[in-house]
Length: 139
Image (cartoon, rainbow, N blue to C red; front, side, top):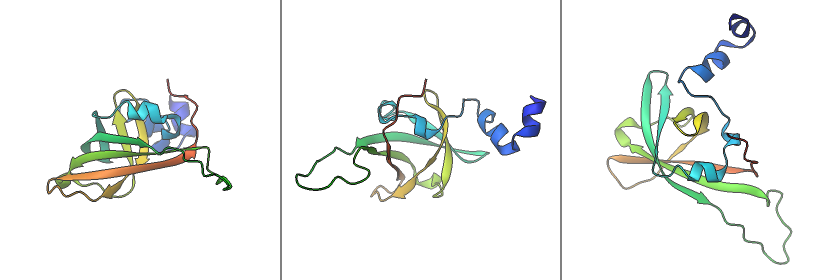
């Protein structure tokens, strides 16, 4: 382990062990894997010592609507979807890439943006994906 620590940057080395679950790239997680976790909780590390719980409340896949006579856009075969998380407004998170931890999916980095909600005590966050189709790599 000392040899790995000497070669790898400290943040990369500790990032995968710090929270106890294997680190995965969010690019390895398919829409179906993420959508299967609706109504489950994620632990989000706002800082190494501040953990906020968010619930995945919605996973929406953007359906493909081919238009006749139109040239397909370059991302026509991309996977387009969004995730909506809900948490307490009193624990509002910054708009930055954050470490998410989930018992089934592992640990990954994700950028979420706060979105408007009328609830005085809740805040919602959205993550938007527009990427090439994911081959189910996550085991």
